[in-house]
Image (cartoon, rainbow, N blue to C red; front, side, top):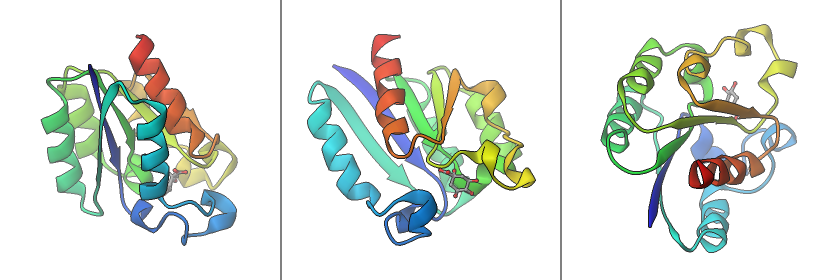
Amino acid sequence: MKKIAIINGPNLNLLGKREPGIYGSTDFETYFESLKALFPNVRLSYFQSNVEGELVTAIQQAGFDGDGIVINPAAYTHTSVAIGDAIAAIKVPVVEVHISNVHARESFRQLSHVSAKAAGTIAGLGLQGYELAIRYLINR
Ligand code: DQA
């Protein structure tokens, strides 16, 4: 059975309530249930934190066994050298996901400390980006 970890960064615990015009009106717990139903043969785990160091620890923990990580580092994408370094340090492939199209937004969202170390990035496809990232990691 494939094993894939989903890691979400700050403010994504407010998904569904937070700027729904940008991020939609579904909360991640509900979406995670539909992901588990969609991939019954994948051992999916989900972790969210608003704390940078906790995200680094989660990346390290998921980084040496299993089949990959799907990460949305949220605002830390644009600021966190530590998260970029953690992704560079681990063995499993990482797919970076952004719900919104960061390239069509403010200029500070154009910089990612993660993209260069990720297998690839999906941005702007809404929550479906997580599903597509999982499909990539399964087929890899
Ligand atoms: C985000 C985009 C980031 O710029 C932002 O800070 C987020 C969410 C996205 O999923 O679109 O919190 O990662």
